[in-house]
Length: 123
Image (cartoon, rainbow, N blue to C red):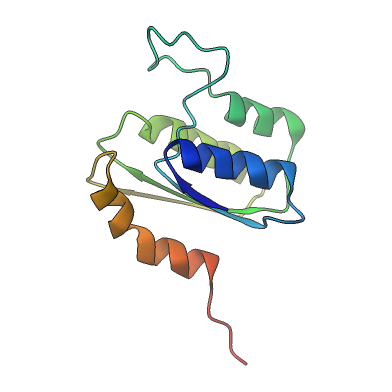
């Protein structure tokens, strides 16, 4: 599963719910800060419900590539999710670059995400 921003969060939920169908997640600027119960008048406080669910429910057989701009408000929640997944023994990579929450950043992470999702194997 692959997505950017809220699409990254949705991709993570898909793989978490259906690990037999989605063995890899590439999330670009995943909106992991958000929670259904959060106060949208101050969205930067966030509740990180996905990370809390991961911590509560334990590991899944899913590999994770998280890519987030270092200038984004979402970078800390991506870092915390990577730490939680790593603590459960998941295959997880976190890539940050000096970039913001935009299509240019996502384009620049495209090749690395594709290499993660579609590794070349010898015949």
